Length: 165
Image (cartoon, rainbow, N blue to C red):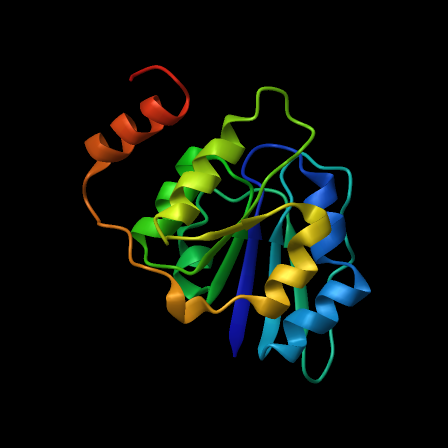
């Protein structure tokens, strides 16, 4: 039973939750061989109704003490572009699609997503381009992120957001 885990962390990213739970996206996800979608919706106001059919299940929750188990079980993670969430997913070796929130000002998330994509570690998109990306991406092209080097990630992040040259 292949699953997709979507997380927005402690934030609110209603556009992502609405997009990924839309009829079109659900059909795409199911057509890719996934039979379960778990949505961690944070503070958002968009809260899709969970459901189960013979071939597909949608589960929804706001928060848990830890999402480690959901990450461990996921075959694909779709996430907001928070640095901590990106690092946690990449360290676990999970295929990752980062959805950049275009409504954020001074969007360092976009810079981080672009750089990690350039290095081959993840795919990134916006809500409007997520369905197309899901249909066209090849997860086998992703490179493993080198584990256990938080100081390198910290330096990388400082460089991306302009704190270091």
